[in-house]
Amino acid sequence: MLSADEVAREDLLTFLNAAFVSTGQAEFLTGGDEQRLGLGFLHEYVRGNYRRLYARLLAVGVNHFNVAQIIIGLLGSGRDTPDDFRSEENALLHAGLRSLPPQRAWKLMARLRREGVNNRRTRALIRDYITEHPDLAFHAVKYRRKMAGAMRHAHLHPGGELADFLFGDHKAPFATPILERYRQARFSKSAVSELPFSVAQGLAAKHGISPDELLKSMGNRLTERERLRVAGRSDTVEVRPEKLSLTELAGYVLGIETPRDEIGWLAASARAVLARTGPLPLTGRVAAVLDNSFSSSGSREKRRRPLAVAWGVDQLLRAGLADHDYRAFWTHPITEGAVPRPRGQTNLTERLIDALEWGATTVLVVSDGAENDPPGVFHAALEGASRIVPELYVLHLNPVFDPQELQVSSLSPLTRSIGLRNAEDLPTALGFARYVTGHGDLAELEAYLERRVRDFLEATGHA
Image (cartoon, rainbow, N blue to C red; front, side, top):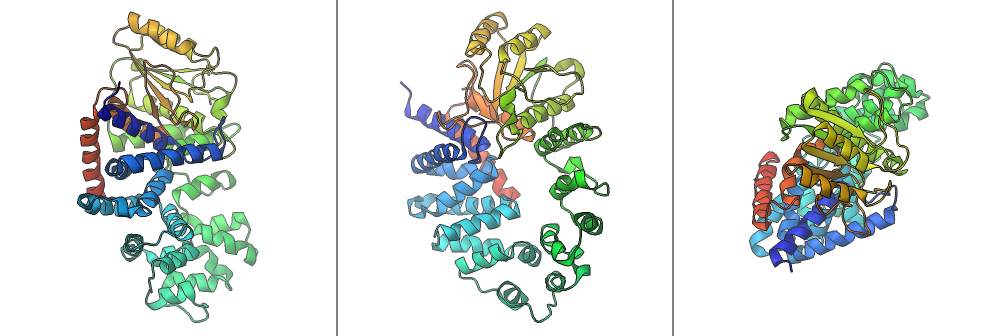
């Protein structure tokens, strides 16, 4: 029978795995409603039973969707916050909101308004986010409706031109350049290209500006993600892979029928990841068993996401390890330098055996865990391999949450699974693995969370 500490540890790790990978969107085998229902249950359960630890999970790198879920859940249940934890929880809420990309932060505030979460702490959080914002005029142009809604919700009354811009009729000129450019762009074609790209797109059609003409005139005003989105439509837009998500790049390249130079973007992005995180904590001969079966094609909402994660992990390992210390084994083998494509069933066992024959002592498996060629054999093979190679270390990295089991699927009781939404999170996942694989108790996990909280609050200026 598990002790209370062991139960708490298992509960937290189950939730963390889900919060790393699930965004409430459909996967290959499950729909969006199932994902949201399972994930919602875990949020309520962990928040109700381990509130302190639940709040501290804002500091460990859960995905943006779940950061927003945690913030909304904490704000909506403030009366349950212990008095001696209120100060830290408030700091975590402020840092968590600040850690979100702007579009997600404004979307979160719109959701707070829609769901009627409007207590004093919520209003203070919105007020501080707005008053501390370094470029409020720019965001007023880009997220005008959401900012106006947030100010109404928090009972804020902006002064000067911002109030006129958000709530006025825009008849009088503005002294703030970007506000005036937006006003002029309703009537002047030349002012459109001086606005944020997402805003300019909405006004371009009104002035008869073609997409190609707009891209040429925008020049360096595009964000990195906007550059990637339009790269296939314009030869004048330069993609800077070192500034982009490795997983997003992999997904983009997988969507190109015959990629050429674009494949090199992945190596550049992988090198940039390692420059930020430092060396991978791996030694000896390392093999990756990578799933490119048909289920890696993902869903309509997350197209080719599992395959993009697997390919991104492969690129990181190639960039971080010597050629003689690393080899990739795809479930459906590909030639060196080729692009993996989703096809066939999930045959992980043969690739595990291939990796062991090559001499691997560490095997990273990147798969959704839906083994079906044949089912259940991976565990038997791993059990036998562990007797032959006692020092063998196998870690399963799963990019898919199973809402029916309320966890990421495991391939074997001999190796725990870690949720991995983005390939660039591999260094963090490897560091976190000791807690998932049973080498750290609850006290160590709590100490780890406290360290991450200190670093998180210091990095966001809320220490």
